[in-house]
Image (tube, rainbow, N blue to C red; front, top):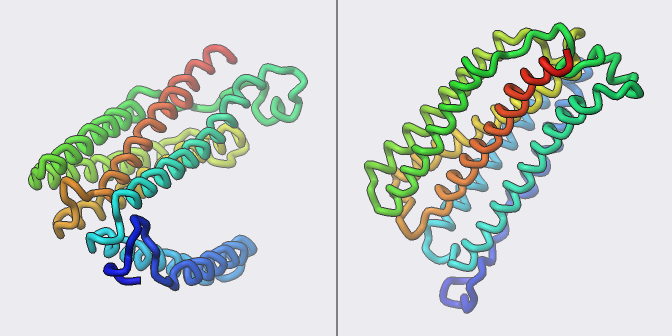
Length: 281
């Protein structure tokens, strides 16, 4: 349907190969992961991963072109995109709720004498006795300050875009990307100094809960950093205007979500975890 024939506010997408290509790539990647875990060749997994990454690039490139043509992304379509992003972030929130639930379930149920299996795995205390925990105030607190600062800089970039201040937009994004990269580097340093392992015999449950929660958050920081890097490239190309910048708006939402999740992680796993030592030991 051409733009002339269009008499409604909705976006009727053109036929696209990317859903099918992406599905095949995900299937190949999943089969390759199973092969790899059974000590077969890892190359099938990486072939599938390459297909997934290429699909993401090509599909989102199509979305960017649709956003820039001034026809497809009407106000109604933009509103529905916002609803979709809200639902996506809600699903991400519930994803992290699962890890918080696992952590606090182990914390509160660990004193129940009937929880024999859990007591055997943790030594009757949570965090397990003898586990060398992180001090929450050197590196974790530093990373918290980094993320809070990055939330400020991305908000600065957003307001600069609304005011059509291209220089403020550029530097706000550059600083946010740099802070996100710094956070990832500090977390890698922290992991290298961990006194427990993911599935170590000394703390299998605690190590799994800690690294899954903080590791997935770190993965989200990496994705958000790439998201903002794409926004920086698009802003330099002139894709965003004060009236049309949905991609940047979603990147800012996602980044603030990452900030808030880290505050809960810092308060519960680092600070509360240290407090738990005083209670349970």
